[in-house]
Image (cartoon, rainbow, N blue to C red; front, side, top):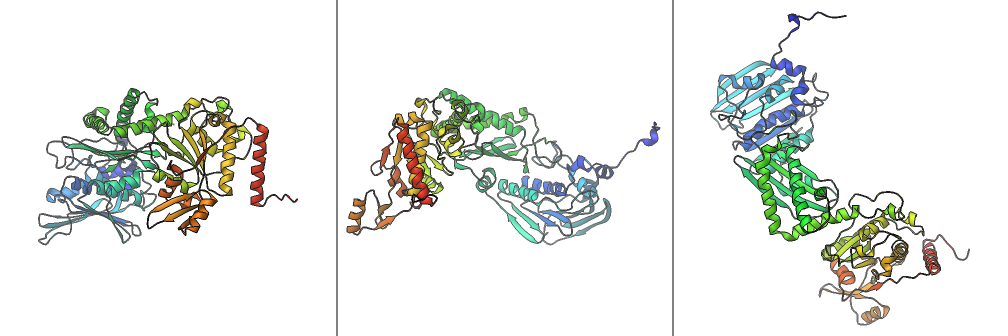
Length: 603
């Protein structure tokens, strides 16, 4: 059945009615009123950006659902009912980008903000101190119900206050996303170091202040990032527009690049044109340098481990929707700023060639791990090798030494005392498989890490010339557990990579249980034999007994493991006698079971 359609069906809605009918069109989502708070906050932050406000305070009363934003900027003009106009008429304001604009850089651009706040609130008021006058404009259900302007000659407590109570008919919850507001203030505090920001939630006041360095460490770095490269900071200006870009690389941690940014103090968590531009420049730059150095990696490998924060101040930013969390300006708009950034990147690495060399090696190392002859191709389990970062703390030299160590404590000590040029460290954090089957051995994560680090494949498809280190040194505690781990590991490697042992590249490090340790004289001498220990005791030397590598400090570990004059390492020899190898394996397992009380030779 058809309905009639004529001029009677045409309706013209006023601004407030249209916003209430289509709130998502103006503020994004209506799950909670956080975007109303942000609309008011944008105005205060714009006063800070313009250099007129030094203090912004946000008060959230989540019990009574009353929220306010205060600043000490210039104050909204009172004449000609301007506060009423900016609260009821769309596309009104002082931020439209023309020659007469009162703002050059700002986040509120469309003249919608306060109208939306008023339209979607039960109660809404503006208080203003300006030109020795005090004004209050109260609205109820978007209608002006009170207006007063009086003289005020005392020192004003603030300039502008926006206060409102969201309409429960509009929002699913009247409790705002407090973390979002806190993040907005944190970003502002980082970029506006001379301004003061306060967040008061139900009477609990937070003074929001972070340095750029602290912000980067807390929010841009991932929890498992380690061996982070030096921070690179590049600042660019083009007229009134500017960009400050900080970036570094994590040698281990999450693979995916992590880039945070703010545009005119708005967190752009969804990225956009500027992030894509950054990626493009870094890919092109490092790819060209890698090709020149005859290194093999793909362009996207230069984004692995990237951590960055971009602060942009733009005259005409364009965002995706009212939430303003993604920049959608065309690339051509940012070409001048990023063109200057590209020049500065070239300059920085020309002045720091060792840093460039280290990064290029890191990219190639990542690619080489992915481009190994995939363990499945050489008798493995049919799975692809992992594409996450390994636990390996690599070295730069192909003439270096790889230490396979037992546990996190020993790893941490070695990492602190090693020479990153010559010493790589790979900790064993899980069980090493005590089995004589290639397929089952390769199921073990710890073994897969070791095979990946060696870079030579596994039997029968081994290329010993691809070995990435001159020596592979097993370093475990001087106790039955440590000896057991070392024995099983040697047997696993004898099965998987016999060429490693045949080439004389596998070593076993001896670990001293005792040492002369005179902390006052800063003397530490490992005692390798019972004779050395007995002699030291007769001479009444201060003796230290270390139950494990984790109990040694970095200097002591250096003496035991890295100092070629003091350390004791023994080359592992290869035998073709599988019967002898099987007997050794059986003996080790019998000893282990005896230690654990699982086996009794007497029946």
